[in-house]
Image 1 (cartoon, rainbow over the protein chains, first blue to last red):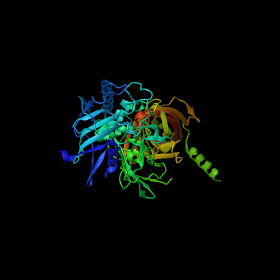
Image 2: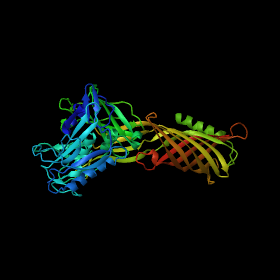
Image 3: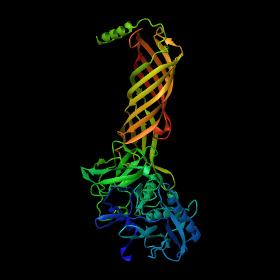
Image 4: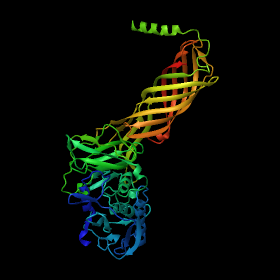
Length: 337
Length: 226
């Protein structure tokens, strides 16, 4: 069994997410390429049992109980998605640390000051043959200041918000690109706004705006663990081209004018194909944009060439999403900047 | 010259009409069939912004979108049968092919907007209505005013049936029937023209925003009474 296991950190696993050869997936899910095949990482059995580490808990303002309560609220938020079957169960406290291959999915603090831009990180142990997750640990970097206050605290990062993002990874979701950023003078990027908890860059300290799942997050977790009325929803598939040639890594947003929601995905193969699932039946507007609001390695492995030289483009017709079906392939031609 | 010819034609049609002493639609024994065109005004589904959430919990507008069911001219067929004095019942069928259109504006990242993304739909409605003739006649009793109210089953096939949307259509309004000619024998007994002005209320199920919307409609048709 051991030789079938593999471990990867979230930042690196996200890079593996592009490995989908089959575009008939919604959202950005973690996947690993095994030979010519790609398998999606997900839990084969739910509820997912998790432990809270009692080690390294000397973080100012965050007691062990408050930590457990905050991550519990984050787990409950994912579990409450009515169209997804994923479930989680608090299994108890452990003296073990996150990032230990002990068969227990553990959440806790670790002091990693050298990771000066990493608030938290999720890593996995999974079965190489099936993609089934075996263990997933989350560490929160205690080199930063943290808050578990209901209304948040100025200058401290909201533990519940960051936990919500990391639990998305723990469940098998990659990063979303539904967000806008601008470069900081000191390096890195500042988030102006985002519409997905799974956007790879956190809001500034003090914000509690990322405690609520958005349509894109809900579509993603529901696509991984479909349940309830998810089967009643539909999808849009198609391809993105420039001068007739397929584009890899283009970000495609489906906007629902009925409710203002946005769900997005990327072109994920050499044919420039994309698929966006979990969409409400009805007309949608498609918008294509280059992936220029976060580091590319937040989404794709660094060896892949992602083309950013094209303008934001709308499809000049609305696309009808059928109930329990796909729109049929649409092609959007984009132009160089 | 053309105007003169057209005027002559109308005079001819009106000229064949004999004196029409009886009210145009008060004959309780006659079934009436009308067919014609109907223009339906646009139905606005309002605007929605594509909002993202800021760190303070506020909104950041990526772009704006306003959607509507475009105005359209279609066909309408009605079969009416007088029920009691001054009241008739009517079966109605409608067909039209408007667009569902979304206009995108104010995209913060591109000057490519505004753009309009539209999709073609086919719209059918089958229903019934009641007509009341208040006894107001015009043009020497050739024309009768009526008031009309009804309901219909409304089906919309979006993008050639990729999606089917069913709803209800409530209509209210009135109009005028003008008798062009009549006779006492033969398979038809009367010919005329009809004009309708209506308010159409499409139910929430057939709208994009889950609300009922009212749009105007104007109809012009010819009728035959048997």
